[in-house]
View 1: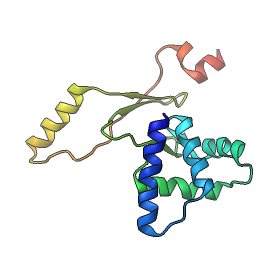
View 2 (view 1 turned 60 degrees about the vertical axis):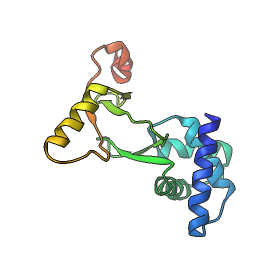
View 3 (view 1 turned 90 degrees about the vertical axis):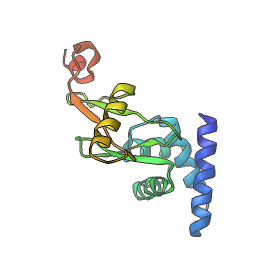
View 4 (view 1 turned 90 degrees about the horizontal axis):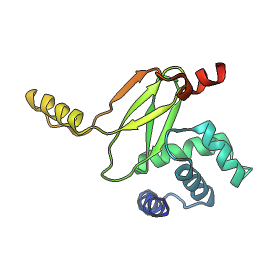
Length: 154
């Protein structure tokens, strides 16, 4: 993870320098908390983690910083059906898709070369080359013990 944070910091520094933006300790702390959180983190969840490190940081600072991270190419902003923006780190040459439980909200990542090839084939049949895509599957956990809300209710 340290290498990923360092690469993100490098990319962010280049982006900020090119735009005349200042390097701040708050941005560093938010970046570290963001990568420590893993993926699919909401602003609210990240804010709690950042405030453990720097109690004075507010929602607007985290929000603006995550937007900056998205613009700089170190974070992907995702919108799932729960209405919240969620962010996950950008890792070069990594691609994955998502399956989201509509009951408990758990987000599972998956990769499938057959699906990727089929998408490329379909695009080619329509005269297109895939530049990027987003694949989300919504369903409910089939095993009650693995579904967070069902396990709590049971």
